[in-house]
Structures are given as structure tokens and as C-alpha cells.
Length: 160
Image 1 (cartoon, rainbow, N blue to C red):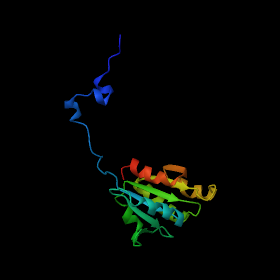
Image 2: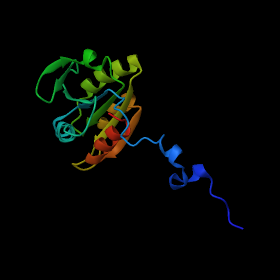
Image 3: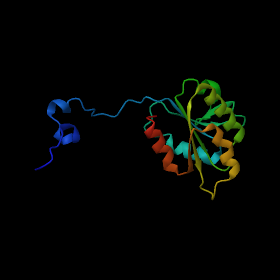
Image 4: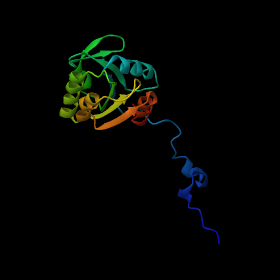
């Protein structure tokens, strides 16, 4: 005796009436994401990904103090104002991380309960302990070591 296949078990088993309820288009962009590079090497990674199909993602580099975020076109903006309506912040860095800027951004995100993720790129060898210590207190999710494609995939997964 064969085991019956339930209608909900397989997309091909669905009726045409049920198929009418399927979503045949990509989900709407629902996340307002800020991607911040904390050193020059990380800025190159962020710049490479910024041309992707992003809805509400904004890309920046951090100023030395972290009080300002610099757009990829070079415009300086107040960090607190740029993070005000953000759903998530992705912090990208290498061993040349600007710890002071990470702390400033991380403090604002913590105060506002903004979801944070950190990607530590290790293109130039192994990760330094100081680099990890600079970002770990502020990143709820941390990818170590991160590849360049990980930023693209993270943005896609969060519907940025």
C-alpha cells in the first residue's frame, strides 16, 4: 500500500485554487539597514556591495570619532540622526578597525535596541585580538572570519 501524499506536502500537488495564493514576486523591502565600514579596507568591501539591489540600505564609512557617518559620495552626516530610523546596523571591519568609532555607533544602537551584526574580514592573515575585543561588545551577531560575499548574503537575508 502506498503512502498518500498530502496536498500541503508538495507544491506540485497543490490545486490551481491554492496556487492563486502563492507569492510570485520578491518580498517587499522591509528593513532599513545601515552598513558601516570602520577602516579603509572594509570601506572597499562596502563600496563593492553598495551597488546591489537594495531597497532601504544605506552605506557609510565611520569618521575617526564615530560622531559622523560619511556617505560613499563623501557627505558627512550626524551618526545619531542616520541611525534614528534604522532597523539594523551591519558593522564591517578588518584588523585596522577604528575602535572608538565602533564604540560610538554601538552605544547608540544599544540605547535604541537596534539589531547589530559585525563582519570581521581577515584578508591580511589572522585576526588580531584587539580587533575582536573592539567589536564584540556591540555586535549581537558576529561573523569571524567573514568573506566578502558574506556582506551581500547578510543584506539579502535581512531584506535590506
